[in-house]
Image (cartoon, rainbow, N blue to C red):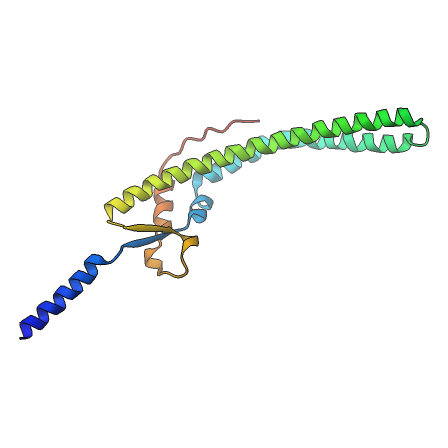
Length: 173
């Protein structure tokens, strides 16, 4: 009788354990923020942007001076001549804004490309981790309400990702 109860108890615990789902949690934002390669890219971008920022600041200063000059000419010039000056200024301002937009888009693309590369490498690491550790489900940290810290594998993935030397294909502007 005691053996039957013990076997039933053992079987029920085993069956519950065998049907449980092995779940882990991951914070992608933290992985991106703590990645060495992203930090290196930000440093390279800052260095590259310095010279361009100086050029843009000079152009902006020239445009401001041009606007002040036009303001002074309002009293002197005829309407048609003033309109030509304003049109010329607006054209210069538009070109300047296009340069700034192109500049910003260039760096945004560089950062997004590397982020996507890191995300793909992270997914490969997660596939290997889930296969090696028989993980059934990995959730993003924004997809759950509460969990134990023991199921959070973010730090593990950050360590693995930082071990890799990811090639930076940074294009200067």
